Each structure stands twice: as C-alpha cells, then as structure tokens.
Length: 213
Ligand SMILES: [Ca+2]
Ligand SMILES: [Ca+2]
Ligand SMILES: [Ca+2]
Image (cartoon, helix red, strand yellow):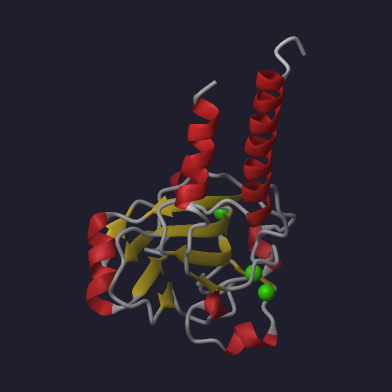
C-alpha cells in the first residue's frame, strides 16, 4: 500500500528529463531500410539504391551517406571510390556525463562479407554485426566513458565507418545522438504512467474511505 505514493513521489520529483538530441539523416525508412526492424526488398548486387533527398545529396555532415545502398561501396554506391563514411555531430559542448546513440542500419553480414572498421572519435567499436540479408535493425549504444570524455574535449562526435575491403552491402537510414544514457519515454508514455499512478492512488483512497468496497 505504501509503495504506490512513494513511486508517484519519485516520478514527480524526477520530472521530465531535459535531453538534447542531434540527428544525421532523416528517419524516413530509406537507406536499405524502408521499414524499421523488418526486411528490405533490394538486391544488393543490382539495386544501386539511392533514396536521398536533394538536401541529403549536398550535405557534408554525413547525411550524404544515409539513404544509400550500398553505402561507400565502390562500383555500387553513389559515392564513387569512397570507402569511408564519416558522420559528424558538432556543437556538442563540453558538459556531457552520459550519452546515447541510435543507429538505424540495414543488411550487415560481417561473417559473409567481412566486417567494417568503426570508430567513435577515433575509439574503436565492434560493428561485426550479422543481421543477415535483407534485415534492417535499429541499434542503441550507451557511449563509453572514454567516448564521453572525447566529446567534452572536442565538442564533437565523429563516427567513421570504413568498409575495410568488406564486400558486404549495407545502408543507414539515420543516426541520432542524445545526452542521456537511455531513450527518454515518449511524452504520452510519461503522461500515461503518471495517470496510471494517479488512478491507483484514487483507488487506494476510495478503499480507505470505503473499506467494504
Ligand atoms: Ca531521406
Ligand atoms: Ca549485406
Ligand atoms: Ca533516412
């Protein structure tokens, strides 16, 4: 009985989390994606797929590499002989304590095509994913302490994804960075949580006033 008001108090005391976020690319389901966490319809060897808007094509922050399939794959991607996709989050300031990254990616097959070499501010990451053709996947990363330190030192997070001679076809829809450790609940989820706690409290009050009910 006593735990419910305690939870409600904790929820009210913590309040909505004030998080800032930065996004490279648009969450439109393109790349090789089309839909989230499902299967895309492209054949890597012949699709030569380019779903970029005009703004994405002229971007220089890395957005030019999203919505293409296969990204930086010479002979197939729209990026000529480039083999490294670089995504640059800038203007991040120097007061980070935790960080969270979300990447919508498609069609990683490290065991068949060879893995890419990925770095966050020069710090190596394990991107040897085997999602299989033609699967798309949204991944979530809690940034390590050294990556957070490097953001504070430079005000940037630069992500490089090097094909490393990989023959794998893959794509990205968007990358989203935020200065929290885990995704923030959607506002409506938060409202529902608070409303649910309120109803429980109301039921408890009724029970106390009317013990036989
Ligand atoms: Ca797009
Ligand atoms: Ca693939
Ligand atoms: Ca996109």
